[in-house]
Image (cartoon, one colour):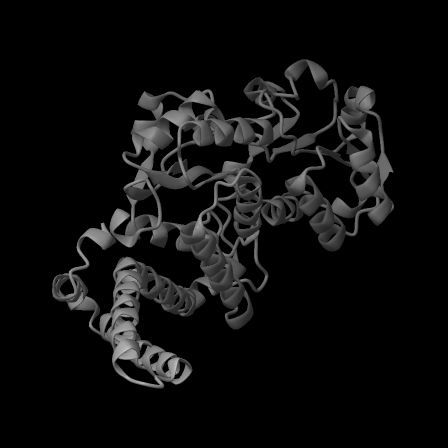
Length: 418
């Protein structure tokens, strides 16, 4: 990417792992909560990385950034998570330059999501941009790329029906409950964790089940109270978790803890209990499934749900891809202009110097020389010449390198463009 004069790092990389090859346990070891993201970004800045983004969701953890070698980014990830380089290499992907650009478009538009049509990832990318911007880790390239991906995502959502009845992890969990629990409107539902997935699940529960017996518990009680006030729900103290589990028919766990928060010892219920773990890393200990009256379902199982809406959305993939191609092509055209920006700048400087020298010569030679008119005329000529060169380089994209070399040679610009 150094040919495009956009960053000190030679190449733009996307490194990460996702649901496609990494199971929930592995993804959990590489997950990054907000504090870890901040530490990673601070270290990246200390290491001299000019532009970088970090995202970590239930289904993927990724780093986008400039580096001389992808290992610089892989090392950062492993140093700030519980994962190792060896584990990463077994399940990871590394995309470089144009491939990395295309990958961000696929991810940001929901085309690479575990459940097609899940647009929650774009808000994660926006948050990643905000976090990196605060530390001055977003350059002009990354800013433009991010805006292009957001534009493509918005167009797909507005111009296609791929998001009609869009399903997400939160929707899939409610979908599972509706299909597997009879008389769900009369069941006691306990939601533990009121982060983004918890909030979305809560909204979907109310919208689709008509249930008025939903209780919220969060380690920080006031967060749960804000959501409860919006929907007129019950909030209990974290200290009451065990007692509330005993009363629940359905337990939904959506906390952001790095270790299990629900253990076998917490569950004393004698009635049937459905436990949905929507957390990465897993927040429900695996041995909970050993209890005879408990059905434990993790989000990986929920994400495999395919309903008629999902099948219907697949019909709009070509339309979505056409929009991505259009926006990505526009971005790549802009990127190509970066290639010849230094040459155009140097040429303009050279022509102005030639103009100044010539005007000085004519000023001494011609009596009553009109400086103002001469400046106007010569500047307009330079502007027209520059426009012709710029248009030529934009149109003749296949021969750009040859054209640049010729311009540099004719006008002796080699040293000024290095």
